Image (tube, rainbow, N blue to C red; front, side):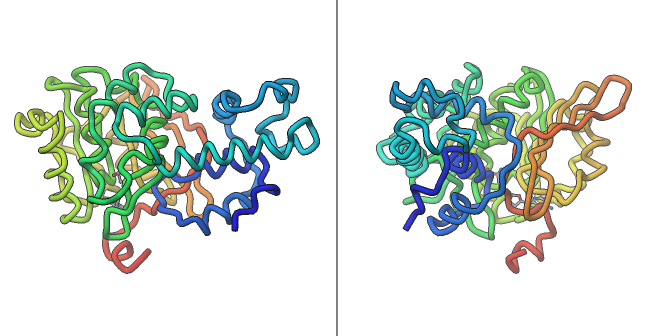
Length: 316
Ligand code: SAH
């Protein structure tokens, strides 16, 4: 049973954003709702706006909504419950029948603000990248086998937005831990035929299935022409062949930022990478024009580990 009444709106927001690519069952959702420690989330402000779309007008006078301090303001019980049910509705994918509806849901929640990202996620059909019979448009990670998952749409959207300036036509993008191939396909659509989108994944079966997925998608011609490719390799080493990269995305959590990935980032380039073990932060790594590197934390996340193939196959 979910502990609805003790879950503060902030905890709800944390639970909402915590699923990078760790597949969580309802029981872990309960755990997150009740025990995730308080941390700093820059995009709580965005989520605050998001959930405010759902909040009853009487709550507009409560400035601490979504901060966890709203216990006794008017409708304090009903509002979190209302928000919670709305978020669970989005997470379940109930009634979300296509990419367009998925994107509209994420826009409604304030997760997608970029027109370009909305267009790209509306064009690459997520249903082609999830196993048959799974709710393709639910805002949740889905198992794709081999202890891997396709990340939740809100994390894909967040990473695409963080990298948008570095995914302009003609640019080079690397997707480490490309899994289902969904985000690599989005990258390819953004950088276009004159650019280069490279996926690196260490499970050969996932590389094969991701190529099959991409072949059914809107970017199949780019795969054929060669501006989009997916390779079997240890992603911690990057993919030097098409370096330096304007954008690097890492879809699994590294204990620390792998040096080869920093080396393969172009001056002016940006990498988005989850870093940590039990507690993970999504780091934004910018390489300055003089080659120095600036790192900042975007938010807390929950991803599967960036590890060896053996460790992954035996369950980490
Ligand atoms: N972003 C992808 C997959 C996320 S799950 C998607 O949304 O579909 C993380 C992926 O990283 C898994 O597919 C896993 O197999 C892969 N991975 C983990 N460690 C890796 C490594 N060292 N090298 C390459 N891929 C790795």
